[in-house]
Length: 373
Image (cartoon, rainbow, N blue to C red; front, side, top):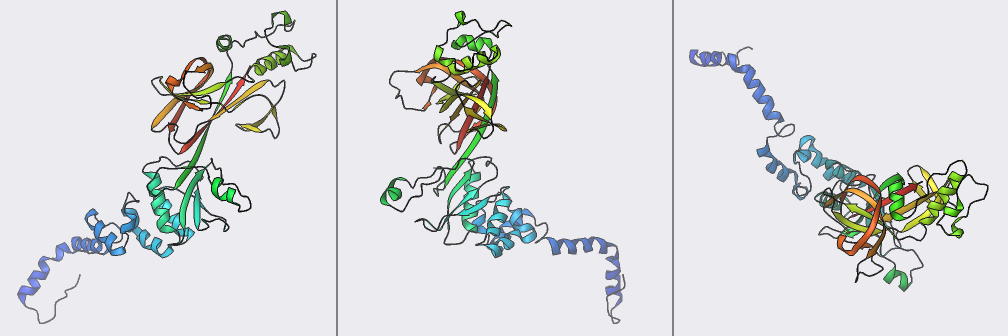
């Protein structure tokens, strides 16, 4: 590097300049660091001041990593998009979420509200929902309100003709509020259990026919009502056996039981569907990739239960099963759908299956069982 001193410089100035000649490389690196310290890799001590300078303080409660707002001037880019769908997309991306905004119909009293539809179930209620709620509220237009967040479980309000009945009694939509702002969260999750009834289970509940031999079923040994024999007489014995055993479940009171890792009962949910079914195209019940239709003489049994919001929260169900033959203890109302461990007695478990369901107040668990014979 050439001298930067003027021709009039003295011996002392030239000697001082020469003493720094070996340090230019390190000084050059320091100059580059000064230029990039604010925008590329600011030290942690810079962050509060940069957040203040860019006016991003209102986002700090909802974005766990403040570097996200500063590096690449992402926070500044978000400010320029506020009030648009792009701002919501960018803001939710900071915390690892995506969602579709769905504005309310203009004829509603709350026409300026919107809801988020998620492609996947949010990982946790706290603190994720507070972050989603806060970022969205800051990103949408000022006149808009975040009303609801939805995944899978979506029961909307009834749409009639604007009468008083509709306004007073039918405006409710699915969801529960768990944040201070009162936003509704309506999530669902499905667990499917495909089970072949074992001899031990069938004997315990009183529904077992040994697989027939070549001679067919022996009606003298049958303990099933005649009205359940809804299959053709020419049907093969194996199909007749499955039909009889499936018909036995019709009218039974069945509970889906959730248990913790130590085997303790979290709760029992009464099943809302217990039907003998046949595999068909376009059936009313979907199980995995197939559909099933209730039918007299069905050869399998479709059983379904769905928990309600806030039935259980903060505990993981590590197994699910069906409880058959249990009775409510004295004092438990017949219409109660969710029962604690002490409110149900007796019964026999079948279709025991491992699971990993972190139960949450905002998630309705849909438990589907397909029992085969």
